[in-house]
Image 1: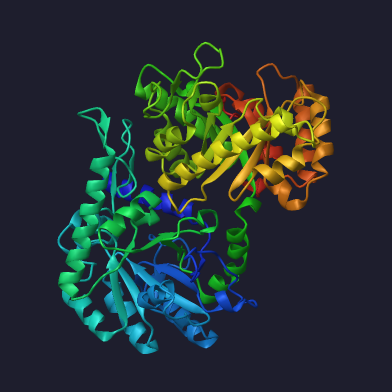
Image 2 (image 1 turned 180 degrees about the horizontal axis):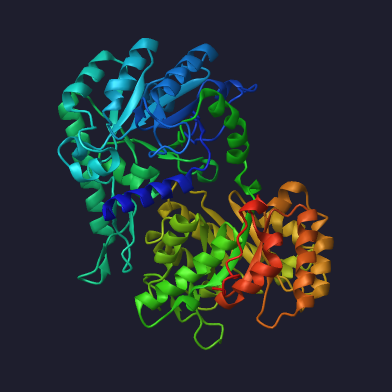
Length: 621
């Protein structure tokens, strides 16, 4: 039962990475950078029209899949799959092979218009009994991703996923391979499970997690991690090639969990093609991994087609997504025992879940004496003492229990005042927290000269350039170690004080690149004129520039009823000004009930008042 629960939680992390059912990928002949495209097939220039392809990911196929609420959210009914194949043929889509993708990647051929790559994961018996007959009927090729240890007797993980006796065998796969309608790729040998990821015993995807060894009170080293991943992938490839007489060339990562770091390990193992899940807009520099769309909830062809356009709009511009942030200091979760710390974490997650916000921002650093110098961090690192190993546990629980994306915050003063390379520290951060959504760099007052004036002095320009350089180096490290299925994003945090913000537009224009945001923190209770001046400066931005802003209001324990009413009006003004990402700074556990009662309507993303439940009616949290 415990292992089954772990498998479900890992699957849940996969769902969080891919929230919509369809994705499109481009193959550019000049640099192999994948990008998304409109499935309606708009007019495209000659260089791209023949190199786009849609990739769909299926799992089990059964005759008895429920229309809604099936026991396996990834299963599709035989009837719906057959109808979808008929739709593919009727609409003129062209199923392709992996070899076609590789040839386009090498600029040796062009893909057909409306190219479609059909993929089926895990080696379920239905791939042979249900899918293979349909492929022969429609003369479609498809790709099957096989966790080789499952086929060779690793029944534990396989039974948890599909039950006893529900996997293909090598003879069946050889028959499929010889037909010309099936290609087989690695789904790893034995990475399709969770491993211990922290002292609190969370199990996280084996391919991207540095394992925690409780007996030794340490994590897997970089060398140990690399050796484990490379050996597994080599074993998987060798077994596929030996059993099926093929030259396998791709890895389809379990749970879609892959980082640019392990892309390189796959190439070492002889697997040059890498496939993840999700959209790829914010990972354009990850040129070797293509994204796959996850099919779930037994969709009909009409439903799949209906969702295409909405997904593409979101995938092409993730900065448009609405988010509500709660900024929380991890220091509040500290406790003498792990059980006491977990009780605090549970209280936090319950409060956040009641608010129905979707993004947590965790302050991962601690300043013991308030002198502005960071003394310790809440994650394993090579630069400063670890105060307590809290970040990984909190990130994973927030993602799997309440579906929140999580950002970590570090101050730029670590580099500017303390001489610690922020990029190196970011590498340490992401190595043990690859599920983070992104990094918030708190610039303190170091960008005041830029935000307060539209005309920057030479010294101010140099300061901005220095900060941008730190951001870009840190962002590169974050991307290298983060899960490609996530939209890894970076934000510069600025504290707004004063009455003049004419530099807002130049700062947004010059300091932000792809996947960047400007996080603006303001206290309208203490500085009402600052909020008024900011709203005036906001009018100078266009819609896209506003969508790259995160605006959070500072709260404090001594706020009056008048203050809360004023904050409600402030949030209404931000919404009216088309700010899509708002939040609260300095959120504490003691604030839960007051925030719930005063600001729920302002910051909650709950779309239905019928599902609202006040968790404090029965005595509070």
